[in-house]
Length: 273
Image (cartoon, rainbow, N blue to C red):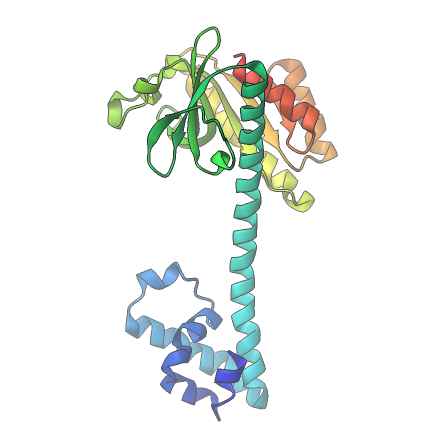
């Protein structure tokens, strides 16, 4: 970007360089997603404001100012991608542990492929399937279905992990689906894979609010499914609060995602629910 901008003598000339238009919009602080809601006039206005308010006042240093503003927006977007990646890696680690416990226990399972939306039998080679799992079905004493990241109608919010008494065929589209039957829920859990200790408390607050909402929603129907929490970054204050909830029975189980013993224990607990 710096090389392309260096061909320009003064900030206002940037409006004429078509190859820089997307970069200028980014430097204006607009995300790629926000561009879908703006027309050409809006975009041009954003670039003009960037030039008038920041680049012209920078004088001879307008190129550096532009590059820094571009990096500032891109850096924030990269941070978001990194946080999303950490979350998805946490989910994959949890699923990998579930698969390991299935294999060690000799339990056959079916899994729903998120890419094709089809149910598949337990594979001979399960390499990387954790990247595509939308749901699990297994039977130990009774039929169990675990669905990932689904909107639970009674709660009217997305829940990370929902475990129901159900078969593969019960997970249908629309209002005929088992997810619309509150009495079929066995347990609901929140999984936070973020590993930044500075954000740990915020993750817990979000998860705790979600779990309280679940208890309240089901409580209104005189139902009490079990609740659990799995987190990658657990600070001391959090740990004390989680332990207190476990002792009082407010929450039924919890585990640190980075502690293999705890992770295995909670996966074993899930499979035996």
